[in-house]
Amino acid sequence: MLFKYFCLSSSISNIINKLTDHEPSSSANNSQIIINFQDELYNTYKSYKLKKVYTLFLRFLQAGIGLGITTLTTSNNPYFKNNTDIISILLWYISISNNLVNLLSENAKKYNIGDEKLKIKLLISETNKYMDNFNDYSIYGDDQVSRIIYFRKCYLEIMNKTPHEYLLYQGRRPSHATIEAKTRRLDIQKNAWGSVDEITDITNDTDV
Image 1 (spheres, rainbow, N blue to C red):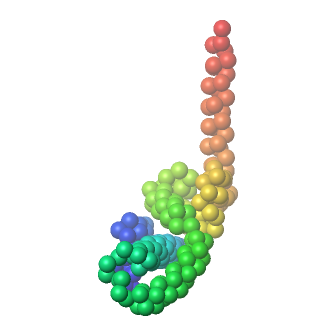
Image 2: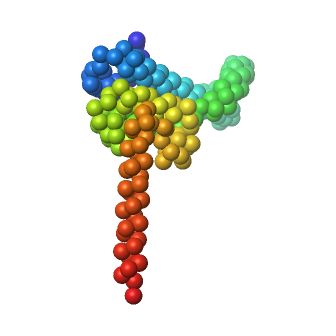
Image 3: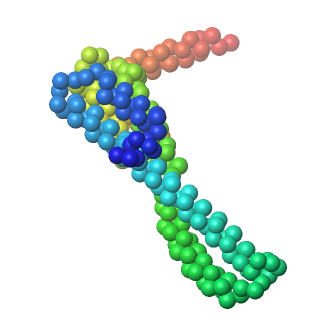
């Protein structure tokens, strides 16, 4: 709860609140899809934020330990000339700490903070498309039930792929929720390609 009130970004909080207020549905299934997405988005952001803080903290420790070792091993340091035994003990503890921090830092490299941040942005973008009835979502017209099912397919694809994979194949959207929507999508594509062919024919006819 503390994370939600003190660490949740305004963009995530706003998108969650907008989803709650967007087209309230009496369908329990639709409501559950929205609730599940809100939970997924919140947990993904929380994981990203905690990992980011953790890696930054380790870098801070590494910098502090490096500065400590440099300071204690400087022979001309006037503050430690008469305390060589204490300095040796301190260096021993700092060296052990340095090894532990380095091990933790190596382990933390498995977290791709940049990818996780991009995934959150993709989720927010997909949510805005859904709420604005943009692009493929407009195909469903007043069929809110099917549109929200399609939204679930889209956000799960973002969750289950790396941002690189998703962006590389984003032209291949998930299959639509109904046969009618698939047919409309195919008709739009046929009309678009037809327009391209017409333009090509006109261009060819005007060649000298």
